[in-house]
Image 1 (cartoon, rainbow, N blue to C red):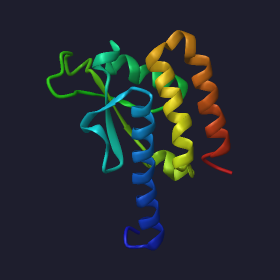
Image 2: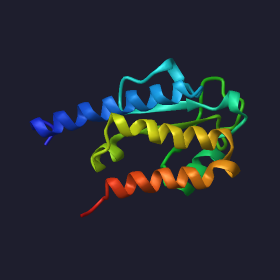
Image 3: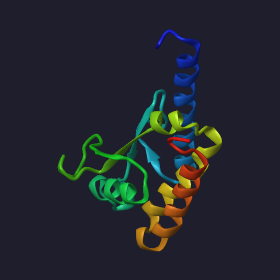
Image 4: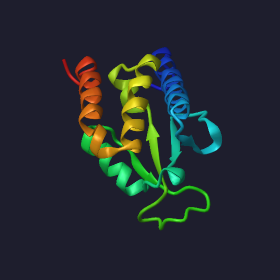
Length: 138
């Protein structure tokens, strides 16, 4: 499968989506560890936001965005809490999302980092619009 032209195209799109998502998050003032990504995932550094990785991963999950808590270098939080989250793009790429959709995903994430209570409903609406546009099954 990995030798097929289709898989190569998919893998390239995964990385394009990750770079686009990282850039959109950084454009919204959210720190990405290392300043960018060169692969399928990125670590969001939440230290300056006052949020924890554990809390943000749970909030994102509730609106339909999968993220994992992740430590960052010199993390002041314990490994059970963390100061970062890990985001990846293979699943959304499999659904058919492309770089143009990363703006909306970054918007939903940034809104939740800014203020969960004020922005949860809008973030859920963004996620629903995207998942309706790119259903798992037809």
